[in-house]
Image (cartoon, rainbow, N blue to C red; front, side):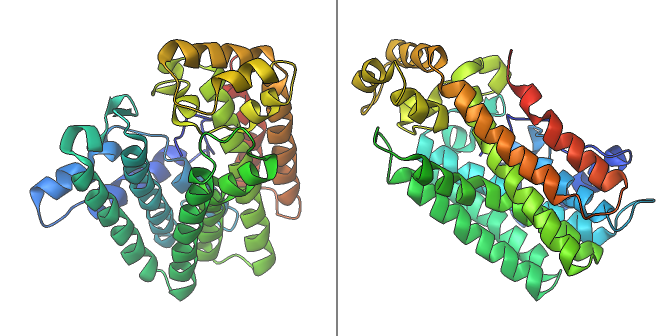
Length: 327
């Protein structure tokens, strides 16, 4: 669930809003124990685009086109970011990752047990913030964490499975990625005081944008370099996670040759060969068509909303997402 794809929503006041996000985020990362504070803040200090809180702020800006959004919107965005960070800690344990955001992963530096506990701490902090924003937000965030787990389990059930279907892939990313984008937009809209129709429209935007985001991220794992990704390229193939471009390639002209490679752990040379085969197929272009359709749906969801910086920059974020893919 990395933030490789896209630069996220940008607003005229985004620098000021993200300064507020950073302040609340780092306050939430403070623990009673200095070691836990260090570990919990490790990835946050490494940077990141803060895409999810940016989406929450953009959604909140629909109700507040002039000036800064209310503090509740910022805190809602931080709660979502903490869930995202916690999920990364747990993901890196499952993947046995050594790096994340160009720095040493928590599990590699301090061990799996510390990484799991720190991830749990981040989820607890997110829940604490959400509880302060009301029962609807708290319930929504809890349900979203459940959807994240369901999506991840669906993925794990199909590792090294070349018969994984497109529907199984889409259901998995709907849970493990799109649900959190959807929650970010919905929480931003709720805490900003928008009417229900607007809340639902922004929720739809977040869901569709999140689906496209993950498809693009999976394409980048095939076509981008380690430096562009900030993590090892081709890792999905190594881990046996066969994403949409790979699934399409398996049913394309290179399918037999690619299928002979997959279905088992790959050595580095085999991984590069598999990436070459996927790139030589029509799989990448077909996957990008799926992403484009989701982005069109995301933009269409914004149509009933009033013009303003929030809707304008959410639209821009959707229309620019595919720019992340190297030509």
